[in-house]
Image (tube, rainbow, N blue to C red; front, side, top):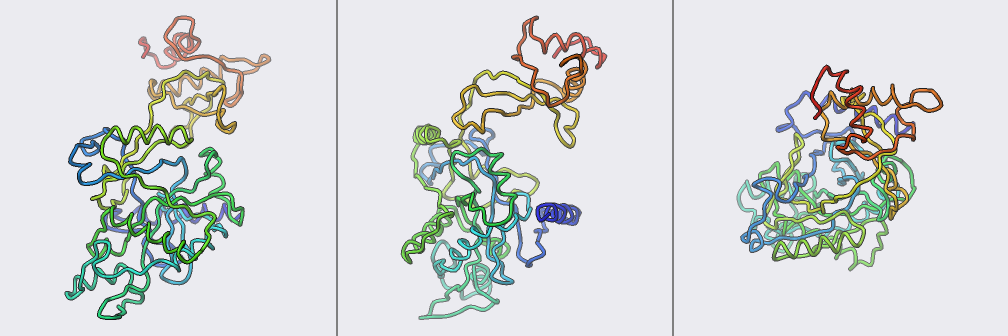
Length: 393
């Protein structure tokens, strides 16, 4: 019931914010007036002009992290009270996870202070603009504290960006656990970056090298205070000096069971992902797998993909049994061909004399180009006539 209510609330909030200008309006939630901007999204290495790495990039600094196959999670401490807010990359609120909220409160309440001149902040705060920026980084209640001629920012207004994750578990399992409320202690929050929405609104962007340095100091402070956090993890950083270094680390991460690697430009700012924008400031590096998998069934997509075929494939010897079955959208077909193929499969494949339903597990074949390939034969005998087309793509 709680999950259903949260889903209805998220749908309504999305309708309300959809009519606003997403480039100018930062969505808010009902618990406080704090902004909830979409976190930075990655680009594939070498997928565009701004996603290539050249020698100068390594001189400026590149940091590599493990890439985790989990769900995006952003957490911050509400300025309206001692309340931890967690939301997804699309701005959806996550159900409360008691164990995570308890540890996150501890983390937020033990963060090191921010001082002028540290982590790229203005040094003195003499001008109105500098004071505004320093205040945006953490002056609680709109006032600035002073101590020994320094302006101490008493409440760092920081947002933590990372993944809900548990090593060895599939993404589907993790996603399901993330939507549950209560104290299941099932997932961990792996933090790979931080950002400061109020400071960005004030016109200041902390660079990646400074954000990573402050994130490291947060966890150093936790260790210094001998605090144990079982479910909050800081993703490890590795400085690299060449593409070969990145590839070597990526292969090591793959062997450890991770999805790949992430490369961060040290001199980059944090860019929001409005309109699904993917930034070339942070790059993902994953291996290209080439293999054949048997199609054991088929289903249809959801939403605008409803009625279009999706293959269900099988991994013969998966490392994790939960990963044995996976679905694949057949990219080589047009949308019209996928819809016709889905109809043909239901009409022509029989089980005990009855048409095969969408999720029955009796269809086994390999996609191919030979005349004996059943999918090709299905195209010739059923799909093409349905489309009124004499060509086979």
